[in-house]
Amino acid sequence: MLYVGVDWAEAEHAACLLDAAGAVVGRLTIPQRRAGLARLRAAIAAVEPEPVAVLVAIERPDGLLVDGLLAAGYVIYALNPKAVDRYRERTRLSGGKTDPADAELLARILVTDRDRHQPLRPSSAVVEELRVLARQDEVASRDQTRLHNRLRQDLLAAFPAVLDAFPDLAALSALRFLERWPTAAEADALSEAELAAFLRAQGHFRADVAAGRSHAALHADVLAAPPHLAAARAGAIRLAARQLLLLREQRAAWEKRLREILAGERAHPDGEILLSLPGLDARLAARVLGEVGDRRERFPTPAALQSYAGTAPVTKASGRTRVVVARTACNRFLRQALLRWAFCSLTTSAWARTYYDQHRQAGKTHFSALRCLAHRWLVILHHLLASGQRYDEAVHQRNRAHASNETAA
Image (cartoon, rainbow, N blue to C red; front, top):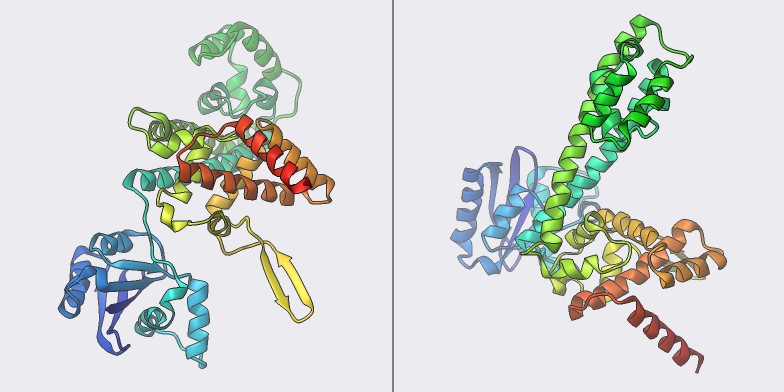
């Protein structure tokens, strides 16, 4: 058995090799290049030729270096940096910190406490793709919100009439209008016929009626910025509009690919199960499946999945004091997706609405009630994935009624 600690950095990584007895058998620094990975693999092979007998500790679960180590066949342990800090405090009272020393510390954690940590079990390639796409789409969604808010503020300061002309600022026609005519002066030169032709080109429903309303709003007696300030903000307005258009286009392409993975001809077998659940569309189902993965051994019980997702609370007890708090050490991408799923299921699942209302009536806040509902959805999801069944609301309602009768008896 060989234990390897790798202290990751952007340019160079420090590595330390320990034998089964915990003695240092090698130290090296490798660059973030193919040659660096090859050098590390050669150093490991010189001590332990069997890849499955090589245990590697590193403070991140993904990245090019981690991909290379997994491809080599090593067993990877992605240790939480916060946990590593606690080990460091235990072994170095002076507070000293160097990359080679941290690499050795990572390896020694596996020597002494390997049973307290779980090795990485990457999902299939298609689910890994799904996870990356879903995360990128979520980040892009936040970017859209930020850009919409910025665009709205610029329009309020320089061109407020367009907000009445196009009430839905996220609409394709509104963004393309601002891309071409970002100032009031340019919009004033448009006739109603020209505006109608523009809206028809954008596929706007009832373009002539919309053009009359928008033209009237653009020429209404409203405040507007002086010409020099309007010209100064025109660039920012046009830029935001173009960025939002690009985000719409890219997110549409991502959504198409997500649907192919979940429900296409070569769809992942778990996609049908996820899409059968109330409140999950393609984007949200992709986020959930991408984070949960398709390695069933990662979560042998629903409680393991609930802890990973952060819906399970944490109990802190000492003497006569006992406090139950929300779990913070979890997969935050999954937790946010689950809370959104719970919220969306309120209008599509009768039992979910009842469950949420019961917790609200018991005095829980909206967020706490959603967390409880997400906690319950994970039990259902775990069962469906383990059994390969689609969700059936009627079956679940019967099961709930049966459980309630047994409890009453």
